[in-house]
Image (cartoon, rainbow, N blue to C red; front, side):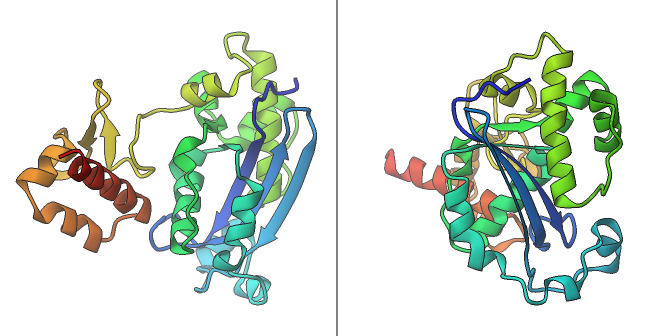
Length: 256
C-alpha cells in the first residue's frame, strides 16, 4: 500500500553509543524519505561520536571506533541533516521513546534550532504492540513474511520499519492511511518534552511528571519554588527538557 501523505515522511533509525539521551551519542543514522508522490530517497551516514564506543554497543550494531574515526561529527552534518528533513513528518520503530529524543538532543548540542514539536511522529512499534505485542524482527516476519537480515544496522532497520507500516495498513482496516491519525494512534502519552518529564493534563496544561511535584502544574511550581528552574537547568536532564521548561517560564513571564 502506498502511504497517503501530505508532507514527506522520513523513516529513520539511529545506532548509538548507548541508550542515555543525555550522555550517549549517535554513530550512524539511516533514513528513507518518502514523498507524497511515492518517490523514495535513502541515505545512511556514519558519525564520529567524539567518545569511545562501548564494546557492549559494538556487539549490537557492529560499529567500532576505527569505523568512525574519520567520519564527520554530528555538529558537522547537523545543518545539512536539518535541511534534508525540513517540513517532513518522522517515523521509526520505538522512535517516540528513543530515536526522536536522541536526535533532538544532538541537534540542541550542535546549536541547530529545529522545531521537532511541529512534526507528526509515527511509531511503528507502538502500533505493533497495540495490535500484536512483538519485536521488530518478529514484526517484519509477521507483517511482511520476510526475515530481517542485518538487524541492528540503521539502514536495514529503517527499511523494515517502512515496509512494516505499509503492511500494517494493508492488514488492519481500522488503521487510517493518514499521518495525523497514525501519529495520534502511535502515541502512548501526551508529553510536553520528549523525555516525558512534563506532560499535558486533560485541560491541556503542563504538569510535572516525576518527583515530589508529580501532578502539579509547571507554572505553579515555578512560582512557589523559585529554585526548581535552576535545579533543572543545572541538573543532568535532557536539553530538550530544559528548552521546554524555559519556554513555559518565558511564556508565563511575558503574559504578566
